[in-house]
Length: 284
Image (spheres, rainbow, N blue to C red):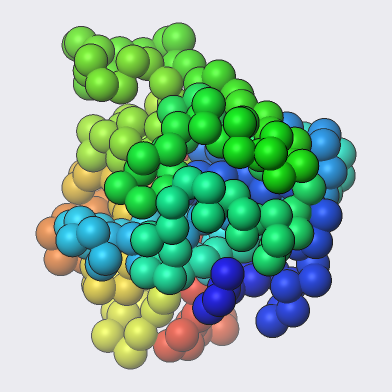
């Protein structure tokens, strides 16, 4: 697969040889995605294989990621205890270079070019040109090409309805990135944490327009690197600077700014923040 992007193991595709690739979009890195990685780790060296540029090619509406790109390695590292103490690596392919492939051609490339030893996918996984292949096709084709195939049932959300009152027919109760986005849009951070298996972290890249005060900082929404919850007040949050704990804080998000206030006991105020630093908020 040409124009591939090995996010964690350099420009050499050797790292994926013989590995087990979990297939999916992996936008939210939620507990369903984690389950795919767990199965991959049981069968071999785990990788997450996904495609970049799908929205642009298919004309989907652009939207911020649920997990900031710079924060993905931290999240995947937190999966290591579930994955035999291995951190799943990410392997991404430009969608425009593979969208024309038939299901058979796709599996053939996995086998002959990437030389993986097996795949893991959810029961609703679709692949190939115009999503013409399904999970049963994946199993059949993998068998033909000598690859192992593991198809997992949905990780179900058994505690909540989709929108708080009724279930969506199409959602069927499975944990999904759509479900995470909806919970963020509702500001239900406890539910978001249940779906993700961790607290949601909003990452901001600071710029020269940030207004810094004694125990308060105002940051423009344009600094956000991933999806925030709905506008409002959020208490019991945690503030981090370049992934280093600063302290507890409360946050107000509105249509222009993110207003962050902490208790003033942290000594980081003696070292002013710089443009380009990453300020992160974990929602309690």
